[in-house]
Amino acid sequence: MDARHMKIIAAQEALKHVEHGMRLGIGTGSTAEEFVRLLAEKVAEGLEVRGVPTSERTARLCLELGVPLNSLDELPELDLTIDGADEVDNQLRLIKGGGGALLREKIVAAASARMIVIADESKVVDTLGKYPLPIEVNPFGLAATRIAVEKCASRLGLTGDIALRKRGEDAYETDGGHYILDASFGRISDAEALAASLYSIPGVVEHGLFINLASLAIIAGPQSARTIAV
Image (cartoon, rainbow, N blue to C red):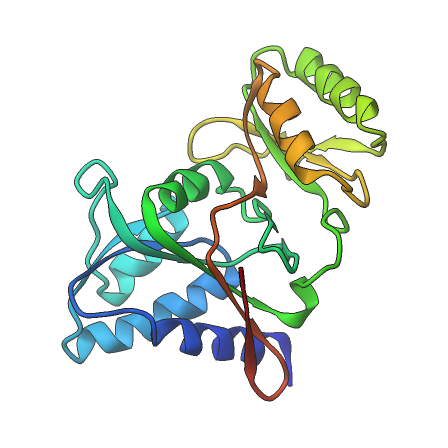
């Protein structure tokens, strides 16, 4: 079974947690988009939800498919967020941000009573860090911020390339007008310490370590899905 079919399996299982009338955070990325397509079918059949998208890309897809949207200012408290992840460990710590929406994704997740992660088995790891860690930064002082990130990582025994994400020849720009540094640290033995240290850097807007936010992960394999809960 190809990767897309596994994403659909995970999205189908997540949809079972969506109830009539919910205020729903809607994630970004290829797995989240499969969820949006399935959600749109249920909305067309009469399911009433109010969605808050985590990116302009997700908002466009929702509007195209008829999923009703509100802003987070209009719905500042959400019942449930469903989103994908680039990595998830068995304690439901995540790396997110491969799709470039980590800041909005984290704000929406934090505003939700629950967060469900949907992913395929390839995203499950024993220790976070195989996937480069996205770090959203202010364009002002980029070189100084990169050096500060390197020093922060070094104090925790982490090394590796820290690359500015590009779109063609130009720096990739997030929906919030920020840049992203992709840090290839390898195995992150203490994700909590790294998260706290990155927050101490003034130029860092947000990072892709999602800790104590997800309550359930739905992990799809070739035939069925399993769950990780803490």
